[in-house]
Image (cartoon, rainbow, N blue to C red; front, side):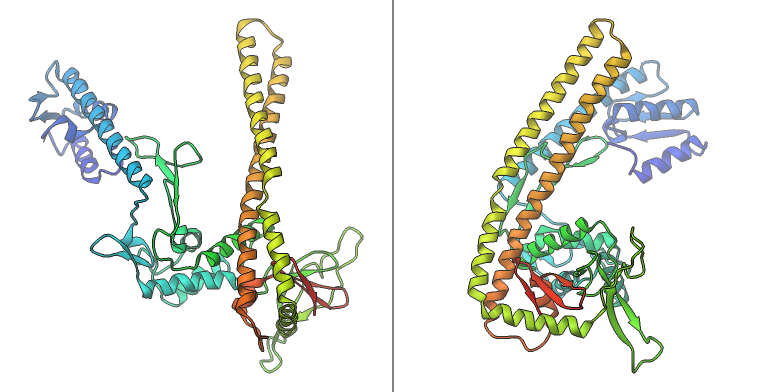
Length: 454
């Protein structure tokens, strides 16, 4: 048992060391501490200050000549009992996970509670907040802007606090529980004494339970949000805007993103928001600034309506192309083959390193030459690890992109008739980017890969 979180115990020890207590009476060694090291260190610190401890169950006085020996033995037994108890609890939890059972911190979890039989039930009032968070994110809001809006609206956090943080918003957006699934044993306890935890990266068995409970966010929408999270992360730039057009409008000349600007902000009747290339006032290597013209939000929204209606006219052909793209994204044979080769490269580098260390230990070698050779092995190993991380990211991206295509197809099939006005939710679901040409023309690229010039 670690003493770090035992506030009452720590206060008692502090008072004893300050001379306020001369004798501590405790029931047993196991109640005082289940960690041999903590127990002995605390006892010795108290003895140095003239404070004695008496253990009723074992009849041990710490000022007794053989007291420390007995305490060492008894605390070691208590520590072993703690380890056995921890192992039994861990086994029970993993057995429960393998059966598909799980629990939630309901008091601090937004959107769900459980009934008398232990079944998850949706709390509609809270679920509406979760849906709003997902909707805002797909409309272009960042984690920070969503948190700011929720705080301003007076909505309490899952832990009933008034101020939302970006981490809370991010965790809600990435939590698979809201899609009706559950990923079990995401992390595990590495030390039964300190209770320190580590993210499970394949060291232990994990389980993913599909359709385990009623979803708050439809699975295809949740998958689209994950794809959007990865897309924004791949941009490697801060996202602070709260517009559906943010990071979606791209310059056809220089490839930069368009940003919003307010024109005539001091004249309410003429005030309007325009989008222009962020590189417009940044000189490139040749000293030439980007000259792609600005576009208004009305032009962007009207162009989307026209492009989407044109897409509907050839809907079935586009759907076939989308399904072919989805199948292509799902084919991971080349990626998996390269991953297998890289895993072999890691094994080779580890074996070469072991042999080099053994050789250096068994005979005299030129250390500069040996270090150079060992550094080369390490460089090969790190390069392989980096490439593995890239490929794993690629696999994840392609999986979510395939699901995004499915969501796009579903949206197409749901809209049999032409739309009359801009729909921000539809925009978020189907548009990948809009390219602004040098002449101000707009090309709408949909998530299925189809490009339409409006």
